[in-house]
Image (cartoon, rainbow, N blue to C red; front, side):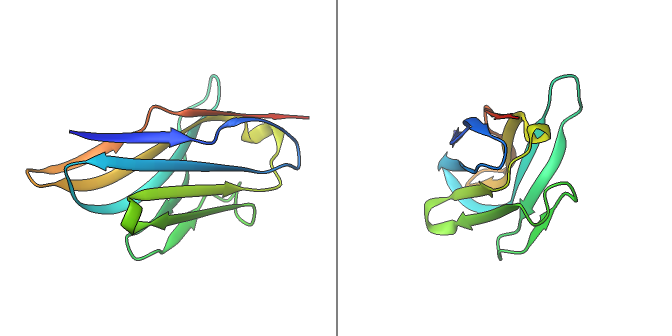
Length: 119
């Protein structure tokens, strides 16, 4: 069994910062790509940031220069530092991890954490 536990969401004023965490636990052999998605009400889920096992990152144009993804491989944890937040960043944020257990490959999702940015 593999679990992803997200934390760090909340309510913040525009211009503020939040840091999201996503910790993977269970029978994990290796974690490959780790990604953050978000879904605003009435909208499709979109990819926000991705980070490879080697630390290479990619970001959606809408968050470049404001969000920073990082990971701690020893802790099987991924982070998303969000600065200069805007009301349009309001969404449920989900982590997505491509990993291998000792039995098979798995594409795991977190339960989501709500980020609300007030104007």
